[in-house]
Length: 313
Ligand code: SF4
Image (cartoon, rainbow, N blue to C red):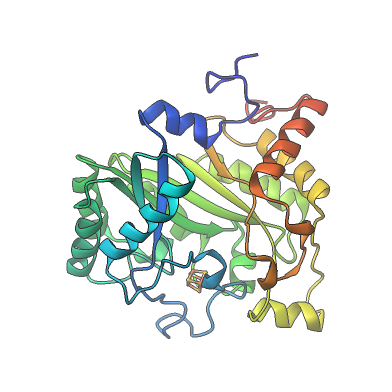
């Protein structure tokens, strides 16, 4: 069966989207440009989000002491051994990558785009760290390159955002997304499923709320308790009723979520793959992303389900 996204996968998947818009295989190269975060430097808070541990997603070649060009070169060397990738996206991933003066952002982004193998940038940031000047600069870049902004949203419930110390609201996410839309910039969102005090219906509500926004891509993450975070302390003290899912429960939750998600939204990820030594719980025996996707696809078939099944009802 052909679905809304013109292929037979039961969800609007990122690799099919990539194949459609790029002629060759594309690989993201993570960059740590040495930005800080207003939620850590005291501007909004000093403790950061209670689950935050940037080391969970920082590859070895990402060190802010190295220039952006060096990080790109080392990333290319690393991936060239694994894939015959021709083109790369520079992924400004660590901390808040629009949290600097526009002159600094220009220098960083233009350095990345000056590398001959780089065809675009992906900029991860907080919704309260963009303004018209920064977005207009990204719009200029988007005339020539692929440009995507990923907004850390995490939840659409303000009570949860307060509980996890995000120090921004969902309304700020909506405002940032609307400011970015219609400027030829791709928009991605991150959400965490399983945050404390959220029920299954709250999580389904996240799908419905983001479905109303002009969002291109979505990354979902299961809640993980990472060692040496504030959340680890709350978990060990049993401060909240944490409901951590096993992999099968999470798969069914993701399917319920997908059924309510706008079929136009491309789903880029379903899980985090933090290094096992950093995870306190749930550990899922080191289940890899491709294994998870395989199980999810099987379960979608068993349930005769697909993304957006309930979206139009
Ligand atoms: S906004 Fe991002 S970098 Fe800053 S504390 Fe939260 S998770 Fe960490």
